[in-house]
Each structure stands twice: as C-alpha cells, then as structure tokens.
Length: 175
Image: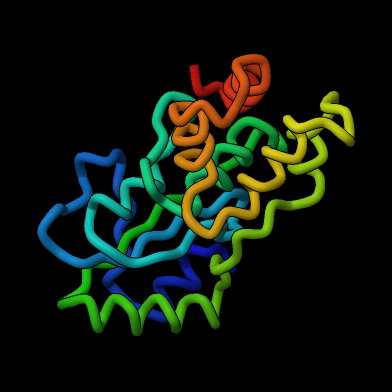
C-alpha cells in the first residue's frame, strides 16, 4: 500500500498534496509529512513556518528546524533518483495536530533524526577521520536543535576557522 493510501486510510478525506509552499495555509495547525521513496523522513506538526520544511531543496533551507540538516543530507547524498512525497493534514487546533502526529508516528514512522549509514558515509567521504571538520560535522548531525543553524552560528561567532567553514559550507552547499 502506498504511503498516501495508508495516510488516507487513517484520516479519510483529510490528506492534501500541496504543489508548493504557497499552497500551505499560514493560519491553521497542520501535520506535515515529507517522504522519500514512500518512507517518511519528516513528520511533524505546526503552522506554515514549520511545515514549509517539506519543500526544502538545494536552494532553500528552513531555518531553525531540527530536520533541516537531515533533509539536506538526503537531497545531496541520498540515492538518486528519489521520489518525494509531500502531504499535509489541516487540524482544528494544536491539540488535534499533536494527536494526529502521535498516531502517524506509531503507524508510519517519521520520528527519528537518524541519518542512514549510506548517506552519512557519502557525506563524510574524503574528510579524514581525525580532523576538526569531521568532528564538527558529526556534532551538527547530533544537534538537538538544527545542525545547519548551529554551523552558521558557530561560523558567525568565529568558532569555526575559515578553512573548516569552507569545507563544511562546500559539502553542504550553503554558499
């Protein structure tokens, strides 16, 4: 059964497939889902400012979203071609959104920050094991906030030397 059909069986008539971020309402709570090859990698709740993460691309990064780095790594280092699925469910309020999200986490997944081994390996390929750049990238992947925002903040604060920032920003296509 496709992910869409599974979602539809759980919440009949409520699953929407937005074409682009402009189709996401900014006034209601939503449950939002991004899948890659029928597997949910992001499943959360919130308003448009959070839900827009499902439209992240190599040109767009949602600031301050814990899953932004995970999505970016999938986009840059995941298996190609990948089929992306983007779904939203409009909710009455935050409480309903949290309830639907919890149900979907149990039923279809999407509640992990884990980076698949093949993507992590491809991402870190060519960076020596015992270097600061590798350690910093691994720290960012373990962030409990948003690894991309962390990296940018560290760079602005002067914590990351320019040569390391150059390696990191090139690898993540941030510049």
